[in-house]
Length: 101
Image 1: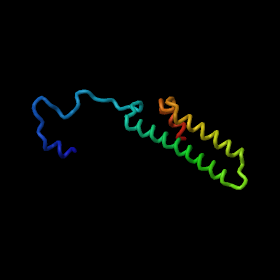
Image 2: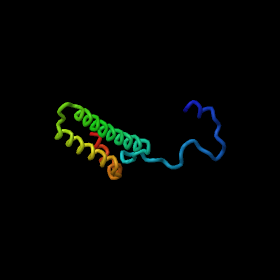
Image 3: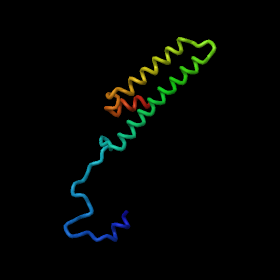
Image 4: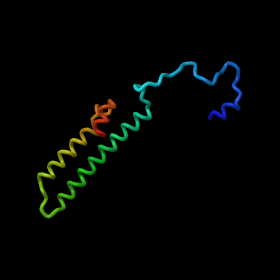
């Protein structure tokens, strides 16, 4: 990009640099990073929901299924579904990071 700008003549009254400098701090969080974080969180929750359902099915397919295990997997699955539908989870980076950890 720098090589291209060297060969372009800029009309009078225009400059290459911004008049206002944007401060970059750790508190600035770009919309792309926010999107990545929310999608990663959603994806992780969906994986957990799917894995729980798969394990429930595996347990049910056994000759002697363990009902306690099936119930605990259902409980986990319902917790993950509630989290994925709760908009408060996606309100802050900290909440999403807690889920990803």
